[in-house]
Image (cartoon, rainbow, N blue to C red):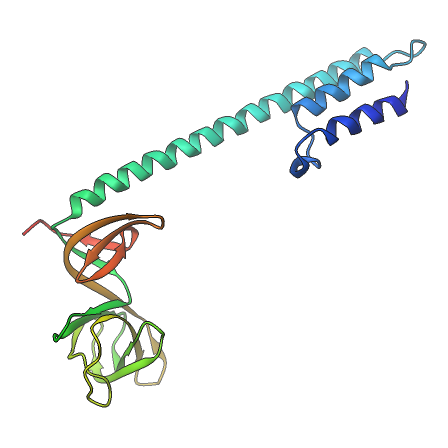
Length: 226
């Protein structure tokens, strides 16, 4: 068998394929290798029939795997499109309804106060409500004492620690809670309000609640329209 000729044809087949897939033997490369092997076999010592049948079986397996992979890819894309359509339809129906969603963002309206809502997983001896601006700089810290494991709400008057009125806009809130022994108590911040707007962005569907944009995946509860 002319091994050099087979190697040259196989190398040519790989060079003509996608550079990103040269390390993978695809359906076309496998077929070219098999044909080259048959064409250049030694007439005195021809390719064994059992070996040839085995190689054909391998080729058939490769072809089936490629078809299965392509089918799974099409199914995945179809499911993505279906999920996107369902999310869009569901998001549209949320407009005007009261929702509860997980978020650390809050919106301070001009000249008004805003509510900060959080849930403690365990009783906390001390709870610090920390408010930061969009740059992450702390502007207000309020300490609360002896809160049980439940939902809680604290109203921010829009002033910093020095008593100065802060500019209206978006802020972030963090809850730092500790128990009697000083261990950390887990807390979740959330927002409740009417979904006033639905936006379709490159990052997915978002609802506007109390001036805050909420990814639809963070919505925890939906009530009846008022």
